[in-house]
Length: 260
Image (cartoon, rainbow, N blue to C red; front, side, top):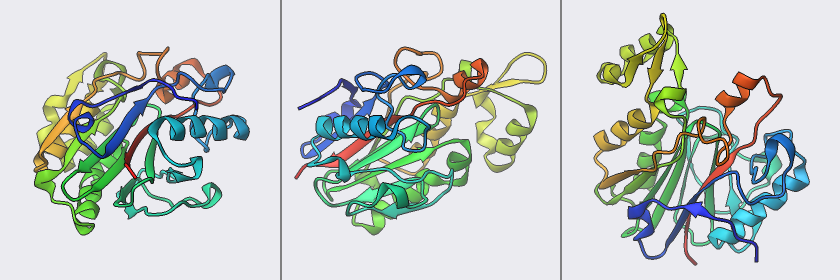
């Protein structure tokens, strides 16, 4: 069986019956700019390499097969769905949050700077995962995922969450229009914008997402604290790709599953 290293969030790791991991770019079979554990079917990588990489992640997390490693067609929305059975990767649903109460189904969020969030209510045996880019984070994808978990039997006071590797504040330069958009919708986020050169700011999206989760009343929120743009050897990064004018980029996976 092929397995690769992955990072654990302390509180999720302490829960019996729940497996999870924040995977890096290491340990796969892809080559070139996708080196090496690219699990993004939306990339221009060789499909066979992506399929093999997803199988490696599925094996590592303990899913019964790669078809049980589910990823959505992520569209920066506030849509969260119930995911209880495998789907055809070619026709995967357009959504940015997934919830599951079926053992053996692994939820896999794809990122390359955006914020992956994993959720678990061990008492109710309900898990969730979401992709929080700035549009989704501001639009309420975290809250939508929590609401879908509650519909499935979870209680937010029993939900533990983990904010995974994402772009760090010093790497995330934004313009004044971006800041204005956030201050209009979330005035409390003003202190998350640090002045940069000229009219630019550096935004702390990691803490923005954490604060949204805390405000939602969850039991606890872990933060991994890795900057995907800065840590080139460990993570794919769309921002870094843009700086280098590369044609494409890989995606790393953040995965959670109820044990069978």
